[in-house]
Amino acid sequence: MLTLQEHILKYMETLPPAMAALQQDLYMEDGLKPKQHHLVISPPPSLIEVDEQATASDDSALLDSASITSSVTEWEWENGRRYHGYKAGSYPIPNDEQELERIDLKHHVTLLLCDNHLHLAPLNKPEKILDIGTGTGIWAMQMADEYPESQVIGTDLSPIQPGWVPDNVRFVIDDIEADDWSWQDNCFDYIHSRYMVASISSWQRMIRKAFQHCKPGGYFEMQELDPRFRCDDGSIPEDSSLAYWSKIICEAGDNYNRPLPHYYDHLKRFEKAGFVDIKQIFLKSPSNPWPKDRLLKEVGKFQLLAHLEGLEGVSLGLLTRGLGWKFEEVKILMAKCRNEVRSRSIHSYQTTTVIVGRKPYDTPQPAAPASEGFSETSAGQAPLTPLSMSTGPPDPSQASASEYPNELSPNNEAQETAHEQQQQPLDIMQDLTPVVEIRERPSDPNPEDPSRIS
Image 1 (cartoon, rainbow, N blue to C red):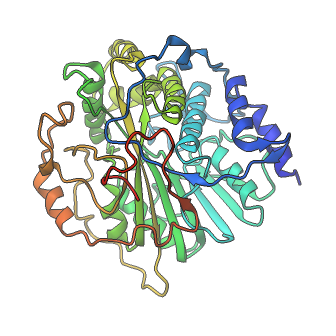
Image 2: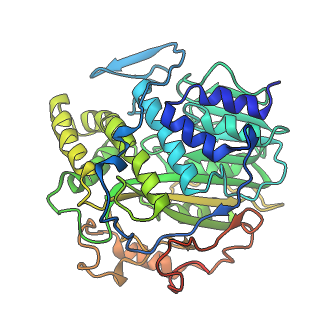
Image 3: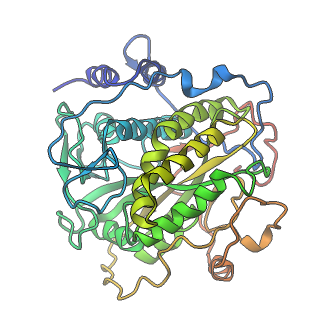
């Protein structure tokens, strides 16, 4: 069995040089000794400070973007991109080398935002771990190294995972959208799902199935992206390609029966499924290195590279299948979007929700509802509050149009506001304190802001 250090070195061999250097800095000190980290999630203020001294040398264009290799079996090809063959058509995003690069770039972005922690759930020697939509398997393999006594199972529609893996990892080709999962109820100590955007037809059903297969006392954690581009300072013009893309990609997802949820949508689904002690945090990913904050600038470098290499892959299947666009029309829009995500005058970001829920002990299994009880479409949008722990969605009624000039007008404002009024306050730190240490970063300009976590 390979040691942790040997796995890390072998993993680094698959990375472009710049990414490997970053990983060595994150993982190791004194040669091959793994670094010890304390999680620092210090949310920046609502208005991320712009670096007025930024230069082109900050751009991720300087990063090597060598392709990731993988063994393949059966594929389908469409508009020059490779897609999964098993359950063909159910997932509109490619699985070729260019997309694998984007997946691993997003993994690095998430690690940076979470201070190199693979999870925020307070785990205690989990025996069985399930990774839904494992992709390249990078998270599952690192999780197996962190918990060598655990069995980690990664599931995906595509066999794109590497051949060398830790002994306590196995990958399964399976469809998480199936009515029945391949495992018994009450099976897993921890279930993890990340970046399943455009993969799920009913988010409520998927979360309910995760509840069903968690052991009593087990945790389900989602790290999910809201793909809509937002800003805090009105720097996204209303007629920009990024604003247009944010609207039509959601329309395409609805038409293709793959709705793209808002960052605030998942809390009510966790509650409805039966989870308790629910905690969530919102993380902003700048689209390029425009922030002054050192960490967010680093995030922006990798996020820009992910956009430049991967935005077309994310868009192509949804726009051609969901809206009937021609390949050439998608290419034109992507060229415009790439120009805008490079622009330092546009201070855009996307939002990731990290939400954790625990399955209660000795709780009867809820029956599958005849109706999920609310729309699974992506219509409507609320303004983003300062990055913070939250127990409910922000109230759209509390923001004026001048405060959020680039937000799409919500058409379900009354429904979301009524739902928020029904929320009960939660003890935010009750279960996360064993894992999460929240403190101010020295670069934070306003640590006394009462809207921030204390």
